Length: 90
Image (tube, rainbow, N blue to C red; front, side, top):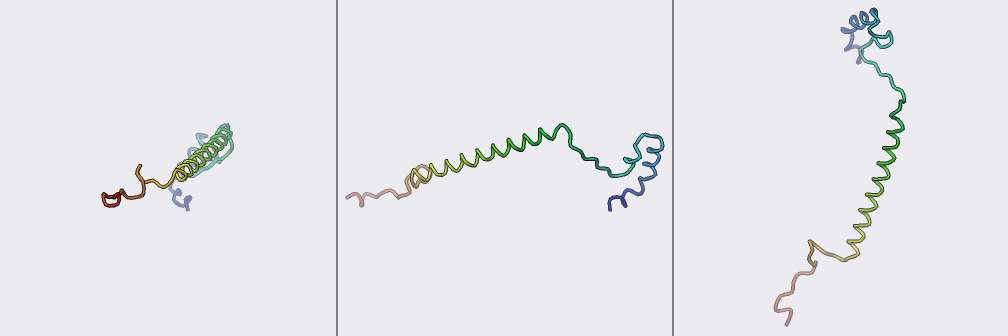
């Protein structure tokens, strides 16, 4: 599908390849050359660090929630129970 859209550009790529401005295997509209380079270990270490950091954050958040639940039910710094009126005190 992509190569069909690139048909009008093929004569230009042929000329560039003929004058050795492009390699023959790269004289096409769409080219992907994939290989593992020096950045791969860095990306692996970054992914590993990200996983460890995410685990720390999740476990810290779980501990904070458990700590708040252990303190008892509270809402915006006030007790859940409504304030007593004057009639209840007597």
